[in-house]
Length: 268
Image (cartoon, rainbow, N blue to C red; front, top):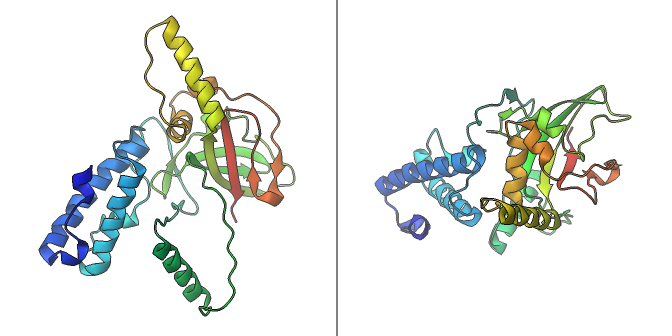
């Protein structure tokens, strides 16, 4: 992967080199997106992926006239996996931005201040919380009943995983006091403790039969299970049942027990 990121500095690229590099990055990132989002088999690390996207964006900022119609900076997710019906999101599901250096955080703060019309010295409070990495889901409730669960997909169209979502005990099948139509977006994830327990069960199974494939990291395990074409596979993942506690004031649903967990924030 080193050869993908150890390229000629962006500021030293000619226009022709920049055009060729944008084409190369578009191909690399498209392949990475398909492997990660569609095939559940990532080929590069998150850090390497982010480095490729940053390089693409830096080239676009230096050569805005070369920005491609299929620019990776305008894309979220990847084409949908086969075996699922499609769901068009009423409001696009976008991905979070990121920052790796203090200067990038300063740039983010500056953008927010410009948007709000605040001076550099004006007070501005931020709220921060850990990012839960798993599978993004959008849950739609009508008259308090869960009627649809969809993945982010490409941001505009997602996969209908309603049957699988119903097997995750943390996701309420019905809500009291909810508006007629409510869409809740959040993350299906696996805790480190539950992941360790799953690994232990895999090892015991391997000892008594043929070897089993290595378990993917918790985020990938949590991401791929709800996207299995068979709800039975999702249900067979250790997801102990216990009543969920709806903590709307904290804008988060969570439960202390269970393998697949749900953290969410209601959207307006």
